[in-house]
Image 1 (cartoon, rainbow, N blue to C red):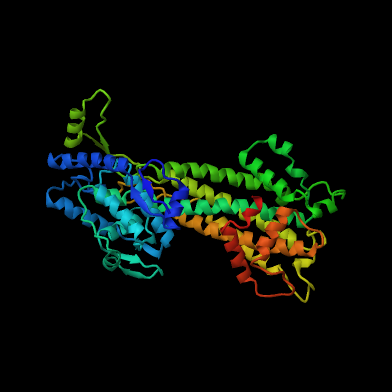
Image 2 (cartoon, rainbow, N blue to C red):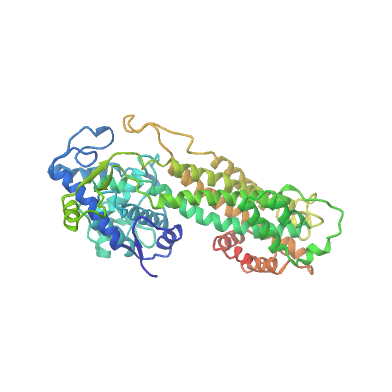
Length: 522
């Protein structure tokens, strides 16, 4: 793939995924390199002038009143990284760590962090040569950013700690760097705090979860339409006039998707003159529920797109601006002498991202919840419009989809627990200096599990919907419905009698995650 040139200003969520999953190469853009050098000159000038400046010539956090000078500055960089690499628990997967790396590199390339350009180059080089730090998933409270996860990342930059090889096996970082021919860094003033101070842990996990969720909501429209058709539901509730009267963008989009999915269905035509006036909410209100999920995803995408291209460490460096009226000689002198300001603030605080992550968890819990209710209608003989009880051929001898609905119910109930917002909590750290935190990483880790659960619930509904449609043959759904049905059948055969189904669910879940079910909308 063509190399991605980062500059801190225009990185997209899709590009993050390309680097994280598809291993797209990354390079520091030339304009960004100049901005990084200007900010670094400000830091160098502070050190040369023995100016007291937080995290450059002082300790950090509660120890910010301790002055650091001379060779101690370089020693403090190593101490900071080592002392903050305190994560525990399961390691983050390779894709999430790679996302962290490109996000951290992009934020530093904005030119407000005061690191050297070679530091960013080394991050990029590690990405390009497949060096992935071992990063435990637990230990961050989301302010001052994701300190522990990012410290494990920084630990690899200086040649310490562990990395993951292509098989996910932990190996010493020194060996990983040697094999990849990457030279470890010797960190200079300000660089340790710039590497470990930020929201890239929660953001990396959140971006990959969001992108997966966007595929899930499209797939849910497709699967929901199959279920509605199999249950002899009506498309009247998706009339565009209804949704124009309450024009939420997501609702309009899902209603349009459902109309397209049902257009030309022979099953729909077979009961057009039936006496039933309207369907249950889980069918009739698909546009309102799925649509609200869509709008939530769009809102959270906007927050993440802002965060991706933000400077989120502390303190931030602001080189002196050189206006159009300044001579080239004067501009060069300003740059060389490192004029500018270093200002302490709180951009590392994860609250904006934490709220978004919690909101996503709530929305996806609803997507799974309404899917399970549709599944219940498919299998319940009191509700499934004459389909066999539990969609079982020879019901009684065979149990059919009795237990898959129980599995879906278990996942939906787990989601309800996981959807409790992490961001409403806070716990004081660092000697009461960091007295209100975001818990954003906790929100991200919960969200990841909710995404997985929702994918599995949709997979179970998809398998049941395909089974129900098989019972309605020779009547067929629409062309798009047939395409979705064929996609499901490409990985899962019709149930002729009871069989072990867990592998079917796994294959359909993978199919959904790949976007191949959603392709029916194309």
